[in-house]
Length: 208
Length: 174
Image (cartoon, rainbow over all chains, first blue to last red; front, side, top):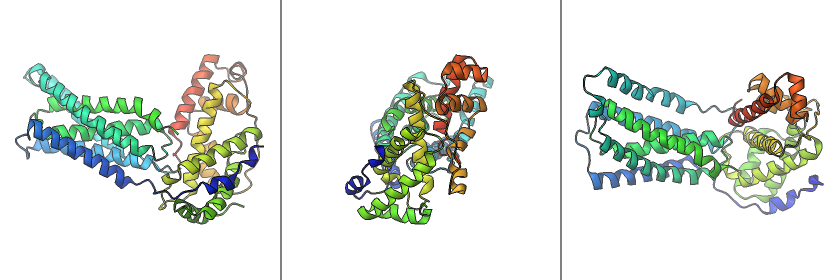
């Protein structure tokens, strides 16, 4: 009978565990982001104008989304009924202003959109940002496997979102373009791609 | 009578440090709590399996409890996850053996009200909850549920599928 499930034997198997630590996740993400930034700036160089308002604004937004979604990931690893982790949604909502503004600016501007999006640079931005994000996402997923996410799909989304934001942040240290139409398009595409990839790939790796 | 949250949290903290005797006590307490928790939603035969699965999950995922937080909401999140996963498996296997078993919760009314499975069903649209109740809890066939609700058979299936997804996403919601 199922009731004879041996609790004594299960207790005998017990070994000490180190509680899942958000600090470890933050350290992993930070280390990979720094390594990615180092690699990008070594190979391609630092951008000029590190105090340009548009650069500071976009960098700040990337960090806000990155940290908000990272906090959601680390929270999801340690489930608890009654906790509502919606901060990342507000951060995404606030940052959605950027592609919206880029769209309006592109429509209203005098310069042709084709001259503002630099497709060659944009593809490089996409490729490099997503590559760094993939490494960040892999590290975060490995960490998440120790936890107990009760909504694997949502955990996959925020993992992809966080990885994409930090990956794009790393590339942005080189990115010379401050036109909102440019980064509103390419940065959004990069983050959207990693978020979708996170939603599709991560759940099957963290389901328990 | 199950120990209070403070006691369970203390036992769990000792468990994370590898104290086997504290863990044995904790497992016993959790087994009792889980049986009561699942009693209204799972038939007796399945209940024991689900309790075992949940205790195994507790064992495997014991590192995921945060000692700065209460214990029972963590256990409830684990239990809900296993329950939704169980329903999904039953649905996939096209089994409908669950029996309706309505009994009053004997104790812990406040916790049950806050983190009960019924509340989880209350978080999804009424038609989806009804389809899940009829097919997955009362054990009706899709055709019978269709007749009972006036929904087409395909709509019943869609409502179950969507409801399960929503419940899965809402496991941590209060």
